[in-house]
Every structure is written in structure tokens, then in C-alpha cells.
Length: 243
Image 1 (cartoon, rainbow, N blue to C red):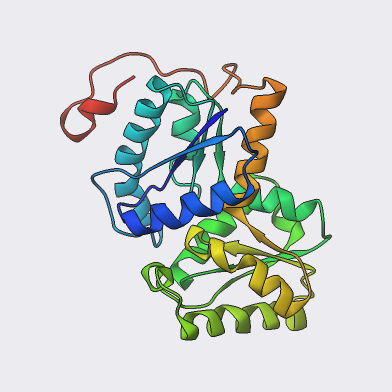
Image 2 (spheres, helix red, strand yellow):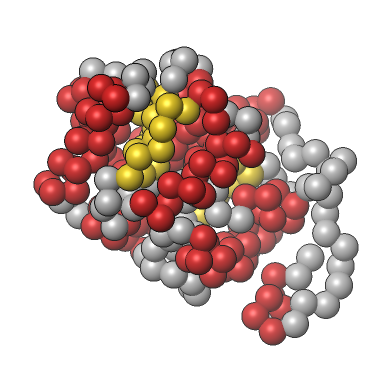
């Protein structure tokens, strides 16, 4: 099968890291097609960046659909543009945030999220409520590490993330941790070994769930908000992304 993994920001090196994480857990016959848009923010940190990332990301979704993708994965923990992508994509779409949350609920009664910056806490909390999983999440914590600081192995960034995991176990009674950024994908195994509890990487979770959808032949329902949008003119910036 062919999985399209889209990094909604424009940083090529982050796309490469995400692709490596996806390939490390994919089935042997799964092809990972990783892309990022040509326009948009270099990182997504909060609502403002998310708004500017969506048009380019949707363009990648449409291109990958035409190229025969069996499923799409949005590799931003805020699940940037997930609903819009489900409305326009022929193949099913999985967000790494939603995937990580659901995976955590299968292995723990209470989990905590450790994300990058404080500005991302509220968007993640909004999504937890939207998905009906807020009661299972003990707390969303921020390590105050900029997304791009995760591009190279950074001892200070790793220490801050690790400290938040320690606090989540001690103060929030978390039984599992969900890493709240695609840029943390390569840290999950190390952090799990250090802290002695499951640490969920959303990229890996999304790949396995997307593969399951394809194998089961399940596609996005068109009876409701994910019905294909009506064809109509889109002016200016969005003209290339009209239905």
C-alpha cells in the first residue's frame, strides 16, 4: 500500500525525520511518500501558524490523491486541517494527534501529553474535547522547546521534555505519555526506557492506524460534514485548492 505522509510546515529536514519514523514502523509492503508544501510557515506553533499551513497542506493531499495514495497522514500534532482534508481526500486521512490519543487510551487509563511550547496547549486541549478524550488526559504540558530546536539532537531540549515527563508521572499520575510534536518522533523509545512507562509517538501510531484502515477497506464517510464540497470558484490564494 502507499501512505502519503504530509508535513504541513515547509521544513524539509523535518519531513525527512518524519518519513524515517514512519518507515521504521510501516509494514514491509508499505511505501511511505513524504511531502511538505512549498508555501507556509517553517514550523507550526499555535493557531496563527496553523491557519497559514492549511492551504499548502491541502494542495499536497490533492496531489497525493491523484498519485494513488491509499491513505494520508497529517504529521502535525495539532491535526492541522484534518477536517478539511477528510472532506476533499479520496483516501482516508489520519492525524497524528488523534492517532496518538487513541493509541494511549488502549494502554493506559490516564495519559499526559508533552508538547513543545505553551501556545500549543489550548489547541491540543480543544482537540481532546472534540475527540471525546479529554477525561482520559491528565494534563497537556509544554516543555517550552521551539519546534525547530528538535531538528538536531539537542541535549537541553531533551532534558526539558524529560523533566515534563517526570512531572507528569509525579504530579498528574500519568500512566503513559503522548509526545505532542512530530519533531519528537525519534525520542519515544529513549524516553520510554528512561522513565519506565509507554511513550507514544503520533507518527508511528498514525502509520499503523492508517495501514489498518486500508487493510479493512474503510474510507471516510460522505454522510455528513465530510461530504465532498460543492464545486465553486475560490479566488486568490485558494484558487489552486478548489474542489
